[in-house]
Structure formats: C-alpha cells, structure tokens
Image 1 (tube, rainbow, N blue to C red):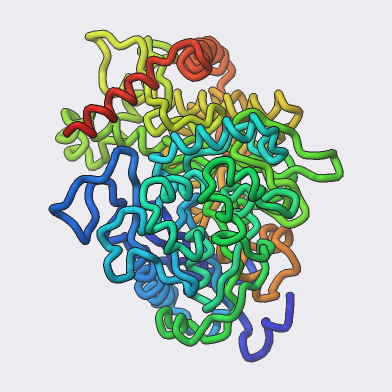
Image 2 (cartoon, rainbow, N blue to C red; image 1 turned 45 degrees about the vertical axis):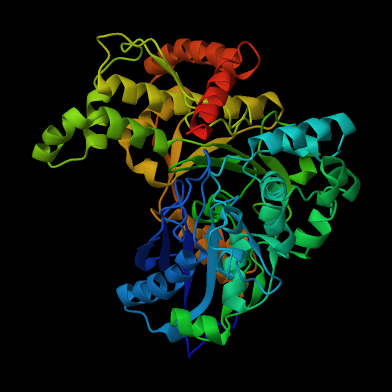
Length: 566
C-alpha cells in the first residue's frame, strides 16, 4: 500500500462508475478489502435512440439497426449517481482517493478538438451521425463487409488478430458509415473517440486513449493503426481517418489519466485533484472484480449481451488466431499479458424479448405469486427434461458477434408445434445462448488456447436456471463473481491502482475482487443429453451462418427494403 493510506486518511475509498446500455451506476468501495459501501443508479433519460432523434420527434424515422445515445445523459450520471452513492455509503468525500470509469464498447462519438460532441453544436442536433453510436448500432454492416473483404484481399497483417473479421460494431465501420452517409458531419469530426475515453476527458480535462478500446475496437496492433494506404483504398476521403481522428498516445490500464478537474469536482462532489483512472470497457474491467486476471481464466460478463475475456501469458508463445474472436490485444485486459475477447450480441435481450412477447398470459400468475414473468418462465422451464420441448434456436436476434461476426444474421427457432409453450421457447433461447458460449470455448481450445476455468459475472448470474443450463451445456463447473456490481467494482479497483494504493491490477484484484469457485456444477446426465442437442445447433449454425443458405441475409434485405419504402 502507498502513502495515500495515512493518519489523515486511515481508511480510504475509491469510486467506480459503470456506464451501461440504459443507465450508469456508481459504487463506493473500500480500498483495503473491496467492500462495497454504497451505490446509486441513474437511468439515462433518453435511453437508446432507435426510432427518432429528440431534436426532431416529428421528423423522419431512423434507419433500421440504428442505436444512438445522448452525451448529456452520461454527464448526468456523474452529477447524480456519484453524490448519491457517497450519500448511500455515508462517506466523507475527503476519504476518496480516486475514481475509475468503464463504458460499453464500441460506443463511439464524433467531437470537436476540445471534446464537444457534435450533436451539441448549433445546427447538428437533427443529424443522426452527430450522435454517439451505441455498441449495438449495427447499421454499418455493409461497411464492415467491405473492410473485411479489402483487408483479406490485401493481406493486412492485423486481420488475423481479430479472427479474420472486423465487426460492424467497431470504430472503422461506424466511421466509414458516417463518411458515406453524412460527409459534412465527418468533415467536422476532429476526434472520433470511444465514450470510455470521452468520459475520462470530462473528468480530468484532457484527452487520453486507453489500450483496451484502441486495440479491440480501433484495430491498433503492434504500435500501429491501419495504414493510410489501406484506408485510402476503402475510400480516398477516408485515408486520414486514423492519423487525424483517432491517433493519440495510448495509456496503459490501471494508469493515472490525470487529476480530477475543478469542473468535474463540482459536478461530482469529489475532491479536486484525486486520481482519475485510464478509461476501460465494462467487460474487461470486470476481470479485476472477479479476480480472473490470470492466464486461462475465461470471464463471461452476462447481461443484455455477453462478453468473454481471458488473458494468456506471452511466455507461452505468440497469440493464436481464434476464428471469429473479437480480438487479441497486448495489455488489453491486464498490462503485460495478451488479452482475448469474444462475445454474443444478444443474451439477456433474448430472454426479455421472449418474456415480453410470449409471457403475457403469465403476467397475472406471476403477479399473484409475487414473482416476475422471467422467474416464472425459468421455474416452468426447469421442470422439463432436456430435449422435451423438441426445439433448437439460433441466438442471433441481434446478429452474431462470435464466431461468425455477422450482424445481418437473425434468430431462428426450429421445431415449433401447436404444443409448444412459452416456457419451451424461453428454455430453447437460454440453451441457444449456452450453445453459443460453448461454440466460443470450443473455438479457443481448437486454436490451442486452453480455457482452464469459466467464471460468470453480470446480472444473469442471479438466475439459477440459466446458470445450471450453462454448466450442463459447457460440461464444466461455473465460478460465480461475488459482486453484483462487477464493472463498477472493477473500475474502482483500477482507481485504487491509479491512486497508488496497489502496485498493479493483479495485486489489487486479489485484495478487492473475488469469486465463488465451483458454485454451479454440471449434471453428467443432462450434459450428455445436451451434447446431442448441441450437434443439432451446430448443424443449423453452420448451415445458416457458414454458407449453406443465404436465407437469413435475404430476409434481412427484404425487411430493409420494405421499411425504406415506408
């Protein structure tokens, strides 16, 4: 421990702030043991913009697969959630030695040179491309397809670090979409910046770029961005994208981005000058909260979507090319280690969709039982033997992030009959996401990257039925992260390192993070039954996702044409 722990501040605390898809959460954490002393949540008033812009409520609708947000909603989290968390903890702000933040990614926005979001400039509030693009903005798939085809044609060396495909969710595809669809907004974009870095700019008053988002979402590898020649081949107007709009010295995770500015201190109620940690991504920072920063420990952060992250030791050899992984980045999770990422675009979202659209008849029963439709569906589904529903689903309602990296795919439910019940569909969707997770672990191990343990964090860890299905499908025990505020706690742990309370993330995670090992064990009989269902899932997965049929792409094209025609 450093000298920040002294007689004048005997029990210091840090603040972690997690900026999620629909809300921001702040947590106050004791530095010596990671105890969570207080928390507060602030929901974004504008949530996710998918239909219309707030500045043009009667204007034309937004195109399909658009997902935008409002930057002022992020600032409101600092104004409201941070002071409320301090009040909830009953903590004197003078005890706070640092603040850390994390964000969804790739959530990226265009700004001026001083960090002002373009949507806040006069005359631009009615331009969709002036707003931050949320991670689940999937309208740049055509640009992603072009990026991938050209990179493969040219033999770009960085492509293998992303499993052979760049996602439509990432910085290049979204930036190219802005250029193509609104060149005037693109021309006014001085900085194309991840929200993870922009919020740190709001806190310490200067631009920084973290190694995590630069590598996984900005395609920064081996000290370089994609070349000017490659970007010019995509579009001559795009040639300077990297060097003009995203290039900046990178900061290592756990580092100090700067001191809290006077303006941010007034906004948050925290002491001016305390350490502001380098920005991070919600899933990657959760590795510290779950104490899964050592090589071979896969962490699945399961919420609306799932992100899988895992470290590997460079001493064991160069990074492997895992088909369909989101990326492998040196220092992307923990400095000094190779960090692998994979993910599933829709998980909790699928379960919510099912409960909302198929669980209506169960609302009264759930209300009478004092439970939720989700819990009622889970309880009913859990009573059915494996395979009794006769269903297999493809979990692609939000496209496929790994291992196909194709957001023009859509969900499938095979085996429906007139006897199919809502809980059958619910179970099939839960199983489909578990099969998707198994597809990812199989891809890693098939590429020679061992998965020695599987830990779950995020809101879905609280659903016993979902956890048991995952253990049975994966055929391995699940470790469960102790904290219910994984990203916020992880950000607080990074803040403690940035403030000098611990020498590195590994030591801080051991002291402040934690998980319960073997919390959910697989049942051998159910695991064997799931092996048979998984074979059917894989057959459908490869048929619809790997060239056996273009039916899902054709359906997406027909939908888009119909919507565009009004």
